[in-house]
Length: 335
Image (cartoon, rainbow, N blue to C red; front, side):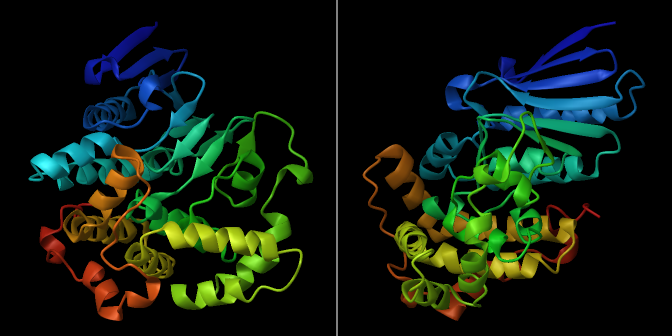
C-alpha cells in the first residue's frame, strides 16, 4: 500500500511504500533550507512512524539538483530578529530536539546528501545511520562567517572528527566534497568510486593537526603565519585570509565549544548549543553577519570585536554562562 503525505504547505513531502518512508525536503528554490514548519512536520512524521509496522526504513532527500539542505531559513530568522525577536529561540529548540531525535531514532534513517549540505542540513543528516554522499556533494559548517557557531550538534560530531580536522572545519568552514567527508567520518558511503586523489584533506593533515592544536585562536593564527613549508604555505595563507573574515568573537567561542563538546554527551552538547544560541541572539554579531553576507551583501560586517586580539576570556565565558537552571532548560528532557 502506498501513501503520499504533505506538510508545511508542501515544503515537506513523503511517500510510504514497500517498507520505506521517503521524505523530500521540498524547497529547491531556497536550496531546501529548513523552515519552522518543515522541522515541526518532520518531527511529527518521525513520531508517527516509530510505531508504524509498515515503516522499517526512513530516507531523507532534497528536491532539485542543487542541494540536500543548505541549512536553516536564515533570511526568515533575520527578518524576525530585526522586527519581532520574541520567541526566536523557539525555532532552535524545535530544531535541536529533532536533530537529537534523529540520532536516537530506533529505526534506520538514511540521508542522501547530494548537492549542498550545510548547517541545518548537517543537523538532520549527521545523526542518520547511513550517510550517503555523491559526486555533487558540497559539505560545510560555515557558521562563523555569519557571526554564529557550528550548532545543530556540531559540538558533538565535529569534535569527534579525527585529529584537529573538526576544529579546522568548525573555525574556517571550508567546503569539502565526498572523499573528504568520508575521510573525516562525516559520511559513510558514496554513490561513486572514490580514489585517494579526490581527497584534499589527507595531504594537508600534518599541517592541520599542527596548527589547529593550539588552545587559542590567536595562537592558531600565529602558527599559520609562521608556516614555511612550501607544501603548506599556500594553504596556510588562504586559511588565514578566511579566518580574518570571520567573527573574531565567534571564532573564540567556537574553539571553546568544540574543546568542551569533545567531553560531553550528545544531549549535553545540544543543551550547551542552545545556551550559546540564546547568547548569540542578543550579542549582535549574528544579525550583523547575516546582514553583511546575505541581506545587503556588502561583505563588510562590523563585528562587536574587530580583531581576535580584542576578544577577552570574559567575552567567551559570557556565552557559556548558564541561561537556565538544569531543570528549567528547554532541552532538559534530552537524556
